[in-house]
View (cartoon, rainbow over the protein chains, first blue to last red):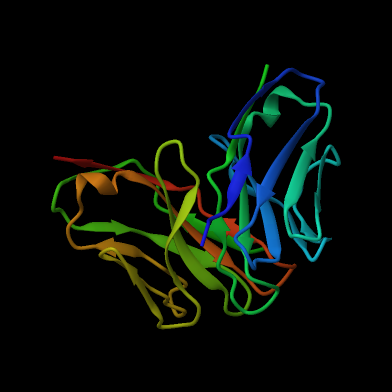
Length: 114
Length: 113
């Protein structure tokens, strides 16, 4: 079974621009979560989507948004980019909203904001 | 809120040495506990997990036991290899405040030949 895939793998943007990152979960997984990883703050939870609905959200400004499609693929959007948004963005999927909380991660999208 | 504390790195060991990376947690109820590993330039890989007290997770020679009484989930390996050099993250997924995984700060391991 194919793992979680993320595109693009690398991205360079300038301040003020917006960016969209894409994530395809493992087949059959309906929950997709996004995390931001930086050297200073570590791994921080952005949001979780399940069946096209955002179920939980971390402490990030409204510039960070996401959505999930009917095939469980998810996108994350960051508007008005700031230098501090430079990070590795990780997507993770899991089977459902049930008892199994195991998440499987993609390789990440490395975003550099200049 | 929920939190995870793990020992700071880097940890430097010689090949075949014994590894322990300490991890303690704070959470309401009975969270699921995980160890993830991250190799340079890659995402996180699930190393092992435990879902209830006294469960032992194991994989590739690594082990960790869910200790409710000490709120700990220490990672151990009897004989490390150079290929184990990576960053290790302890994590929990709790039962309150909606689903999310809380990660520790990560511990970088260097194994010398």
